[in-house]
Length: 224
Image (cartoon, rainbow, N blue to C red; front, side, top):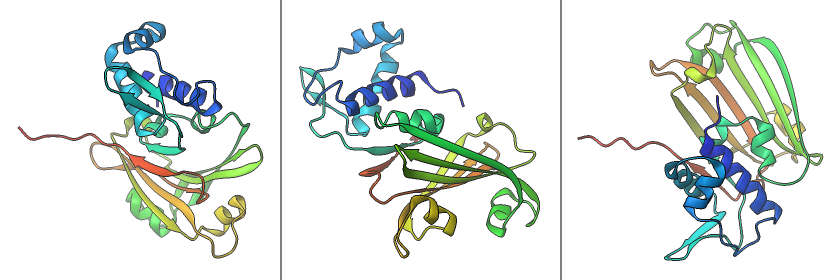
């Protein structure tokens, strides 16, 4: 998906805050100054600040402005991060080197995957395994499945995520170097089109100490 301007701008500010370039207590430029500097509207700037606030990176001070939080936490935001590739997503979280390895192959659909896509168990699907490390430390691994005839991900209108703490699969445990019996943070994702069809499912695992919090954002539709 094309990354929205507010996600890109917020990601850059997040990187600067976490690197210490923008230290705790520092005041950010005004909305108007950010809008002029980035060449965007005030509405986009407001979404930038809202995203940074939800990540615990900035705090508003009435009649004074927006300031960098005293103790920025590492928070995983959804669905904003789904609009980024892993290099960008994890690159905004620290100044450390991010290594991403992807392996793609065609596999037979398991019962769970077949049910998600409404296909027959054993049908061929595409599998992409993505492993991410930060300065050599494994921080994420995901198994992503797509039907061979699935449209581009831009066709997805909804993202459904289920978060749990659970025992990892053998492959995920090996990559994350977990001790037998240790849990991981697990996120199961379904990308769905407006007609209810799942076009991509993904299972992501993170070390338990990777994020202080998980924040889920969604649109609220009010009936007239």
